[in-house]
Length: 423
Ligand code: GLV
Ligand code: MN
Ligand code: MN
Ligand code: MN
Figure 1 (cartoon, helix red, strand yellow):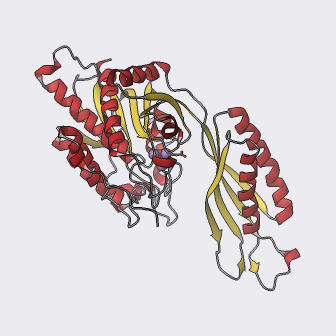
Figure 2 (cartoon, protein in one colour; figure 1 turned 60 degrees about the vertical axis):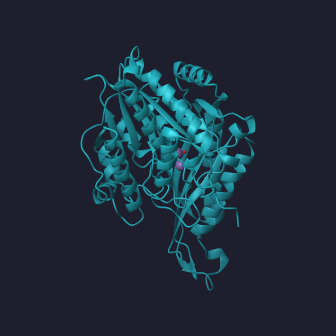
Figure 3 (cartoon, protein in one colour; figure 1 turned 90 degrees about the vertical axis):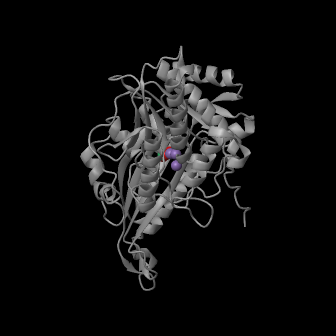
């Protein structure tokens, strides 16, 4: 039994910092799991509840709340009528039995950073601080892609990478569509959302590099590429007892070979390639039945697109071998993919200066996971920041980031947001 996670503790902070940690503690109650994590898959009741709570928080601070046509939630603060927006935020949906921090931290930090700046621009102390852009706090829809694929759905529609109607028609395993799920939680809106000039996102690292290097702020300078696939292994349903081995066309055997293949390919490129199968559906999934079909989702990731292409070719070759060995037919559909693209250097340097001004230890890092900012950076200059993750644990209820790191990240995001808003 792992030791329970420390609860977010506002009493260790004062003023706005204490309010931020208190709001974070409240946010952790939506979809809370007995194991100390959260479960708020996209468009679920818990996802809807946190969004309505968040709308209240934004409105109380004087922000206008709108949902766009794919359920992205925006808190708008107009500082310069007609000007485009700095879009800052992340996602509050989660994986099943997930941690508290992935995404949720970044949305709440964005809101609190914006609240602080709103105060600055309202007060006399703002003399000399002139906003050039408006602020849109964003809670993107369905970043995780656990219930509805692909991941990063809301930001993909917003950035024009994914067709709206395709996204709305996507169904979960129960046949519920994105449109129905969004309607059922009251989060399907209209329109395209605010027009972006810049974007920013803060997130937990979900890896070990910052903890290892002892830095508080990671400035993301590029991402790993990803190729995701759906494989459909077709076999033939038969009796597990009476069908002689030679006669079997076992879809689960073929799928298992694909799972092993993914790992074997990763082992050829130690440290440079990550591959996994994270999802399997077995049909009919019954004890005395040889599987007729298996659907599985496999992903390949690397910082080196040549390695990714090599891995892809190896996989392709292995698929034909598995078809022969397991007497199955394997259909392959290419899913969501993204290339390696650097974050704009101006944003990296702006963030490094902000960290130095605040006296926060920092370094450049890469993101291995996909983020909504991975989409946004292809549309507008984007700053992506990380705070450390304890032991790199993520997509797990034991995901943890210390309160003082959350608060340092909030200070950092506030500084960066101010610089972006003031141009
Ligand atoms: C999405 O977050 C991914 O990393 O696939
Ligand atoms: Mn995330
Ligand atoms: Mn995640
Ligand atoms: Mn992610």
